[in-house]
Picture 1: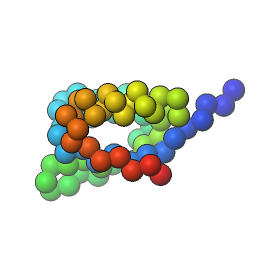
Picture 2: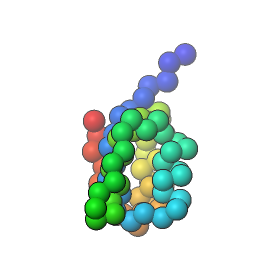
Picture 3: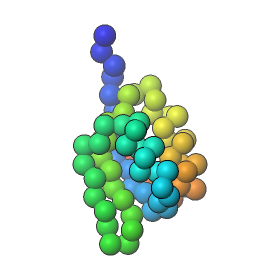
Picture 4: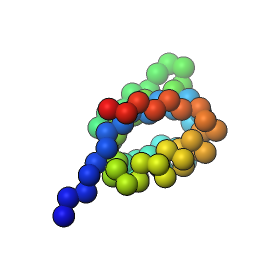
Length: 71
């Protein structure tokens, strides 16, 4: 059985100790980059069926301080 994957990039400005752990535990990291302003850009792959739940959870954790780029 094949599970469809979805690639996306997320830029997070509001970082808590939970954000990186949640993202690393629930996605396959393809690339990550930290910027001098403290923001974090992550290119990742997640199961397509988990996309909306994943976005809602990250949005809640960051208080909306994210930008999502679908690849």
